[in-house]
Length: 70
Image 1 (cartoon, rainbow, N blue to C red):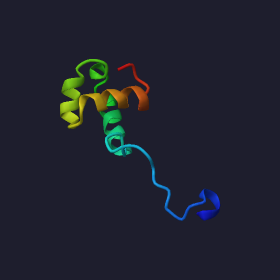
Image 2: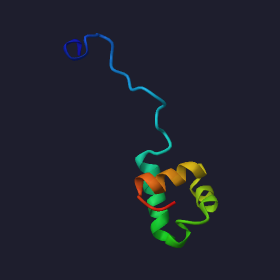
Image 3: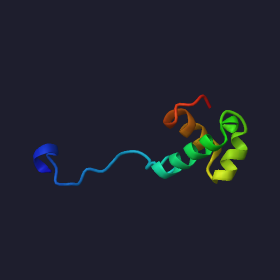
């Protein structure tokens, strides 16, 4: 490690840790969209409540991870 960074300290990731957009949450949203595609663009409040995730997190997953117009 010293040869690459010039330090003996471990490399730590910077910024806030991502916990809401983990693979299992993205997979749950993907399955939900496949089961009920009509609800995918509208009614985010109902879908986020049924999946027990934040509405903004749902929108980000749909837009960034699933490439849907959310």
